[in-house]
Structures are given as C-alpha cells and as structure tokens.
Amino acid sequence: MRTLWKIIKAVFWVCVTVVAIDVLTVVFFSVYRPAIPKTDAIIILGAAINTPSLNNRSLEGLKLYEEGDAGVVVASGGRISDADISEAAYMQKIIKKNETENVPVILEDKSVDTYQNIKFSKAEIPNAQSVIIVSDSFHLARGSLMAMREGFAHVYWASPNPDYYTKSELAFYYFREMVAMIDYIPKFIKG
Image (tube, rainbow, N blue to C red):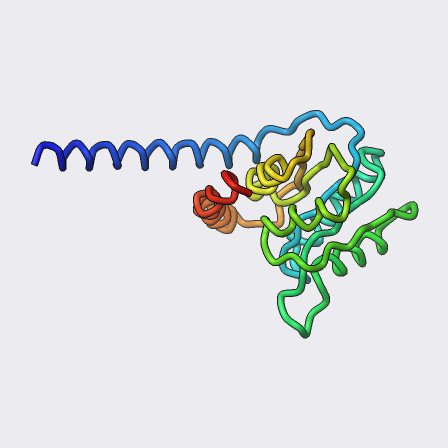
C-alpha cells in the first residue's frame, strides 16, 4: 500500500509540474514581446475566415511587413470546408485590401492545424532562418515553439491587440490553448 501511495504522489506532482510549466509558457509568450529585427519572413497563422481573429492577424502581419520587419509574408491556413476559400486566400484578400505598397504574399493553403501551419510554411520558405509568428496572444506559444522545433534559427512573435474578445472569450481561449499545448507535447518532442 505504501508503494502505491508513493506512485500516486509522484504522478500527482508530475501532473502539477506539467500544468504549471504549460500555464507559465502560454502566459510568457502572450505577455513578453521580443524586439524584432529584420527577419526573412512573417508567418501569419490561420483562424476561421470571416472572423475578427483572422482579420486582425492579417492586419498585424501587414503592419509588420510595412514597418520593414520582413521581406515576405506567408499566409498559412487551409480550407475549413469545400464551400469556403482557404484561410490563406482570405488573409491575402485582407492584406491586398489594406496594403499601402505591393506586399509579396506566399499562400500556404493546405494546413489544417498549427503543426501543419509551421511545417508547410517552412517548406514554402526553405532558406528562411528567421521568422515572425503572428497569431492571437494566447496562441503564440504553440506557434512559436513549433517554429523553433521545425528548425527556424531565430523566432520572434507578435499579435494584434485582443480587444475584439470579451474577457470570458479570452479566458476560454487561454484555457483551450493550455489543453492544446499539452496535446502538442509529442509534436514538440519529435516534430
């Protein structure tokens, strides 16, 4: 019985440690903003089309490009359904509608999740060593860590101001992201 109790305690403390690291990682990436030097590319991670999230991510990527932070934008996201355009095509429309100069946009329109966003974007820009990951603040940890795991030497991150979410929506998305980070542990380990 003593051995079983020791095992239960050990499992409990491992779980507490994993959850604590998870929470701290998501919060760190959502709060800390690194100084962004000139990079090779900006990768905008997809979200559902026709949403404030995808619209604002696209505008944030455009802003970074127009500030001279990268030479190309990769719009990354596939189709949610056959009836819709891809998330990447939607982002390109937002960028083209709001650009003040011609922005080179590479469409990565096959991915269906964050892992594929990064993996397929890397294939589109194989020589890129430095990137800026653009997503909502709660999603930056997963996207940035996947970019590091995929082999980008220098990874920076940025997000739009999340004022288009209510506090309860943000709490939900942060919680959902913390669960997703735990689900991504095997991908972080083996890529």
